[in-house]
Image (cartoon, rainbow, N blue to C red; front, side, top):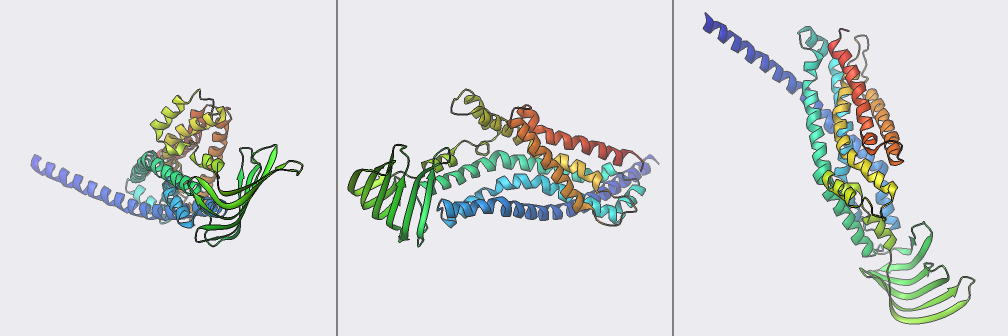
Length: 386
C-alpha cells in the first residue's frame, strides 16, 4: 500500500515538473524571439542617431579612411549592446506578458492554480542571465574594443590620411579653447601625394606664418612638404621674414590626438578604473569635474547591468492588462518606461557630476527608483486578488 502511494507521488511530481518545464520553455521561447528583435531594433536606432553621425564626422572632418571608420564602429558595438540589453529585456518582457494576457493564457493558468509569481519565474531567470551577460560584456569586452578603436583613431590621425582623389580639401586644427590654430588647404591629393598646399599657422599669438609648397605627403612624423616657402608676418600684416626650404615637416593633429587618447571610463573595467581614480586622486592634470565624472561612471558600471532586472520587474505588472482591454499595450508601455528611466538617469547623472549628490547615489538612483516602483506594482499584481 505504501509502495503504491510512493509511486503515485513520484508520477505526480514528474508530471508537475514536466508541466512546469513546458511552461518555462513556452515563455522563454517567446521571450528570446522578442529579445533578439529588440536588440536589432534598438541597436539600429542608436547606430543611426549617434554612431552614424560620428562616422560621417570622422570621415569628412578628420579625413579618416572609410574602412578604418567602419572598423571603429564595429569595435564600439559592444558598448552599444550594454545599453540595448536592458531595453531589449524590458521590451521582450512587456510584449511577451502582454501577449499572454491578451490571449487569456494568464487567466487560464491562474485558474489552474499557477500564480503570477510562477509565470514570472522564467522571465526573472532570463533577466538575471542578461544582467550577468551585460556586466561581463561591460567588464571584459568593452574595455578591449574601446582601446582598440582609440588606437585605430590615433593611428589614422598620426598617419594624416587625406582622402585620395579629394580636391580643394581643407582641414582645421584648433587649440584647447576651440580657436583656430592651423588651417590646411590641399588643392588635390593624387596617389597619396599632396599638390599645391597652403598652411595658415596661427599658433603664435604674435606672428602669422603662411607656408606654401608644390608637393607634400603624410607620415607619422607629420606633414612633409617639398619645395616651398614660409612667410612670417606680424599681426598687422608686415612681412618679417621669408624662408625658402627644400623639405619641411609640421606636426599636425596633436590636439585631435589628445582628444582621442584622453582617459575615459570605457577603457577600463571596474577594478582598473577604481585603481586609476585612486592613483590620480591628487593629479592636477585631472580636473575635479572629470574626477567626479569618472566616479559616477565607476558606479554606473555596476548599476547599468542591474537595470536589466529592475526593468523586467516593472515590466511584468504593467504588461498584465485588465480583461476588458483587448488591444496590445506592450509597445506603448515599453516606450513609456524607457523614457521615464532615461529621464531619471540623465537627471541623476548630471546631479552626480555637479556634486549635488554623491557619485554612488547618482549612478544607483535610477535603478533604485525603477526597482521600488516595480516591486510595488508586482506585489499588487502577484499577491493581491484583483
